[in-house]
Image (cartoon, rainbow, N blue to C red):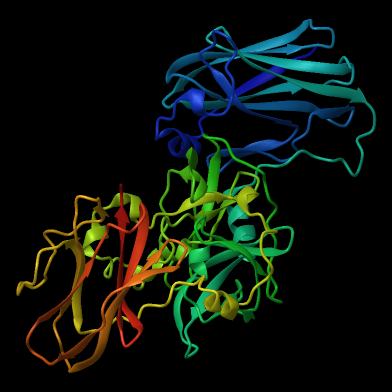
Length: 507
C-alpha cells in the first residue's frame, strides 16, 4: 500500500540568521490556529530537493503531481514556536479525508524556527484527487497543505511555483543587475560612489543620497563598463529614493516582489570602497513609518557607506526594497571616504541621525510625481545639497547655546547640542581654525530647512588669519522666529560651503 518516509533537517545557517533576534511569533505575519503554540511559517512541495548551504532547496516546487512519472511527493515545512524537544507528526489524508499514512519524528529545536520534511512514495495504484498533509507539533495542529495527484502525462512545459534559490544564485544574479553609481564634481573627478540596481521594468533604482551633490553621474556595470546617467525619472529627497534612466550598458534585471513579512529571510550586497561586493543574509525584523521619511523595513544586518542603493532581496531572488533611508538629506556629505571624521560634535552622539541603511519598500516609489530631470536641473532647482569643500585649516566646529568667545581649542564642544527650545535665547555656531596657511576671505552662515530652502543667513564677516595662532569664528542664531523642525546650517567661505551641521527646534 502507500508508504512514507520522514526526515528531519537541521538548518543551522537558516536558524542562526532567523532566530538570533528572538522575534515573537505573533509578529511573523502569520495567524496561529486558535489555542496552538506553533505556527507553520512556510511550506513547499515537489518531487526533488536537497539541503544546500544550510537550506532545503526544492528543485521543482509545485502542488500537482502526475502518475506514473512522479514517484514521490516531498513536503517541506518550517514552523515557529518555543525551543525544546518536540514531537512532529504528519498525516497524509487521501481524497475524501481518510488517513493514508502517518509519520512522526522527535526534534530538538534550539531556536524558535525549526524545519523538517516528509516524503510520500507514489505507486501507480495510488488514489488520485486532492490530498492533504496535516501537521502537528506536540499533538497541536500546526498547519495543513493541499496538493493534487492526477493520472496524466506530466506536461513538458509544466509551470512551477517560485523556486527558492541558493545563496550563490542570488549573489550571481544580484551582482549582474547591480551597478556602481559614481558622483563626479565640476572637474570631472569622482568624489563619492554608491550603488543602484535595475528592476524588471527596466528602470535603475537607487537612493537620493546616491546622486545628491553631484555635478554629473556615471554608472559602472559588473564588467567595469561605464556610461553617463542622463535622466532622473523621479525622486524623493525626504524618503531617500531615486529612479533613474538605465544607461545603455549590459545589465541584468531583478524581478520585484510587493512586500516582505517580519521573519522572512532576506539578502543584500555589501559594497566595499573598491567596489567589491559580497552577499549578506539575515531576516526582516520590523517595520516603522515616519510622516516625512515614509515607511521603512528593518533587517538584522548593518551594511556600510557604499552599500546605499543596494537591493534587498527575498529567498526567490526578488527585490522588495532599496537600502537607504538616510534621516536628513545631505547628511552623507558630512562623511569622507566612508568615515565619520567630519560629523560635527553636536551630531556625534545622536544615534537616530547616524547613517544606517534601512529598506525603502519599492511600493513607495511612485515614478509618476515629477517630470524627468537632468542633474543640472536638480542643481538649478535647489534639490541637491551643495558639495562640501573641506578646508584643511578648519580643525572643528560645533553648535551650542550662546557661550561667548573662547580661546580653548577645540572650542564649544562641551556645550554642543542638537535640539533647542524657546528657552534657548540664542544658538551659537563656532568654527575653530588652526591655520596651516594664510586664509583671507568673507565668511558667513546660511540656514536651510529639510527641503533645502534658504531660511536665513548671518552677517558676513571678513576673515584674515595666518599660522600658527588658533582663531574662532562665531555666529549667533535667534531660534525664536524658526518654526519647529530640523534645519541645516552651512558655513561659507567666499560663498563656498566648508562646514555644515544640523539642529532641531522644538516648541
